[in-house]
Length: 454
Image (cartoon, rainbow, N blue to C red; front, side, top):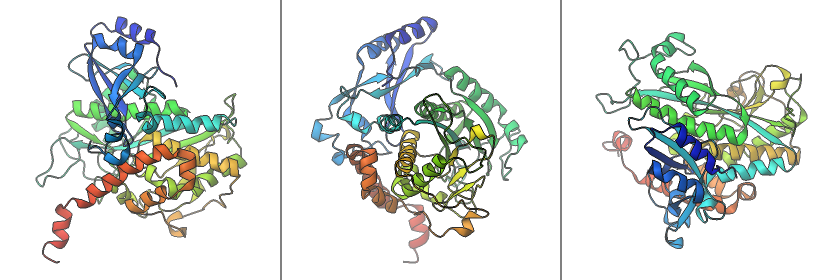
């Protein structure tokens, strides 16, 4: 566990004498940052002896409600669990009016019990350690799509794309449009500056397949570090958008008639010396790459809830939408779920295209790598890659509803072994509670469909 040394905090405070407040946060299973706002003089104590956080903080629904049967509420008296800062996570927040820094914490494996069993970062570490024990070192990167929305709703109370620099509202789809990026240049300039300040390697920006939709690629690297960066990047995008009078959303399908937002995960496996074990002049990669694909396909249904965790996530799955629909793979083919991109031999890797942007990067990466590990151990054959239109050739489809995915994870013996019975116990309790709350809520769609017709 890479908890930070006390000198890191001392050096930061010395270099940033104006900092008054410290935003301490931990990421829950839904990917929601939760924590406390501390004063400057409280920081060193956090590094010395951790910070107590209630056990319930890692067993909440998306809306922040306690889940009583998670085992983290009354059963343990909502006990305090100690969390410690992660190395390299103490950074300035340049958009805040009061000089403020943020530090990410994670539960201590022992002092943080029982909440530490539900810490999503711990799960990813466990899966990575399992791969490393067999000589496999995972390398990953994220591509995260998001929408820039107006902070104000339209006349019907619905979200709408943000105004561009000319005061107009983008209406047409201009995928890869350069003018669209130019129109949000002030936002992008602040975003890239904030990424640089926080050590987040943000690279290529593109205008995506809908008005107001943007994608920025993060650089590949050590799997845990890459997911740490993805987590902090999502917070940063939302904060910088807010500074510019906009709202950034990573919701999987904010508009029924426009493209959904995905989180494409790039993965390869290196040896201890850093050599890519998927590297090959063959565009389909090495036998190890094929085995990794086989493992991800074999565990796809059982992992789907971790890739698509919310009811809205499944609205993204529509034919000919660049969202995957089936357990398929292919070479340089964007109509499949697992794509092996082209490029030089030493860059050979797998692009996992299933996750919604609403997924928790730690949990999605853990499930992907657990599938990779399964494929390598069992030497699974994925079959021939799909050529041409993967949508038209699909013989087996992914579920398009939340409950089916929830049940598949509940019933998976593989998931209990790969991800841990204790973690799944908390996670599934939270998701069951959210499912019941969501299905019990009556709203506009119910009235439109059934009020006069039933």
